[in-house]
Image 1 (cartoon, rainbow, N blue to C red):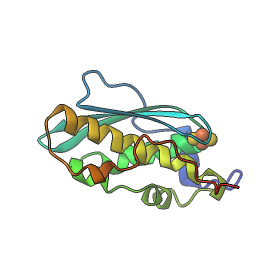
Image 2 (tube, protein in one colour):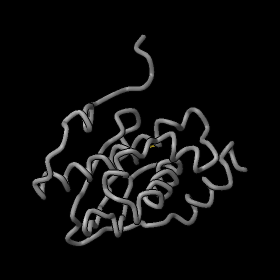
Image 3 (cartoon, helix red, strand yellow):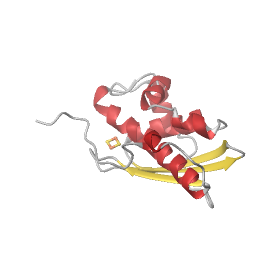
Image 4 (cartoon, rainbow, N blue to C red):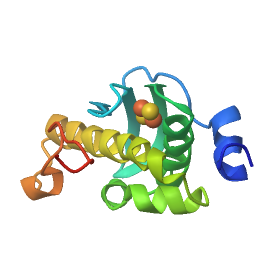
Length: 146
Ligand code: FES
């Protein structure tokens, strides 16, 4: 373990899965982390309602890379509606935890996936409950205001 990172985090950071761009993606989501300014972009390929491929690019830290890598693995091959249920906590759990100061980094992956699903729904005329995406794209700060 280095600096409190689990072996799974180190593995996904050093050897991230699904890195890259995707031409003609069916859904693209890009979000920024208000706290550190890092950026995450996720691309989805959707066939008959199932995510058949997913790629990500990030200007982010090790934790952002590891959580995005794990998140893409968790949604690949799943129905698109299931991707919306993926929480940053589930991704963190799958990585055997993150140092608490890095939890905010894991939010990037969850939000980028949600943004990509919304883009897919918007482009393909899929009706959805706006509540599903409430808060997406809003600047938010996790630290309590002083
Ligand atoms: Fe920015 Fe981790 S420090 S995403």
